[in-house]
Amino acid sequence: MRGAPRASTASSIVRGERRGHSPRVRSLVVNTPHVALFEDASRGIVWLIRRPTEGAVSAEIVDCYRRCLEAADARHARMGLVVDVRNTVLREDRVFEQGMKLVRARATRSFARVAVLVATPRGARKAHQVRQEDESADFVTYDPVEAERWAAGEYVRTPRDEGALAPDERE
View 1 (cartoon, rainbow, N blue to C red):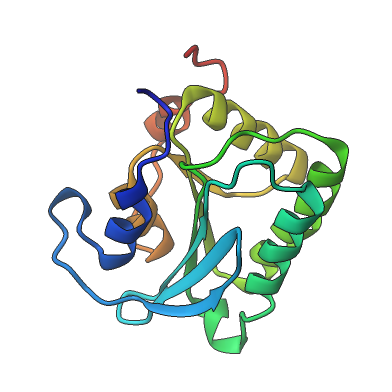
View 2 (cartoon, rainbow, N blue to C red; view 1 turned 120 degrees about the horizontal axis):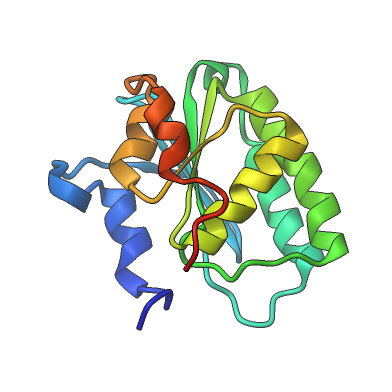
């Protein structure tokens, strides 16, 4: 079933087992009911992984993001952040949007680079829309390897990349 959350995805990403990557240990920094923050200090990457949660209240989700990002300190300013929202349902209510605007600003200030990992064309469109509204340089991708490379500072964006996840893609 397309778009359905896979229980093993977050744990396999955390262990670094996707797409031929050798397993590596990522340290859990903060764990909340809706969001977890992991660090891979060896690559200079922090993962912010949103969990699928049925019926969650928007304010609670925003608070979980905020609590995770409060753990960012001066050493994280040189690291990249991967925001993994592949296992979530798109939310567009006012409370969520307003709260997430502050969360995104904090993420941009706290990390050198931000990659947003999405699962669907609809998620990519939303991420591009938010990127334009925030005037941010976040990198949006479907590929966890690309997201890691961007966050680690190993990926150089080309003009072709801008069209790869164009906001007008259809599901």
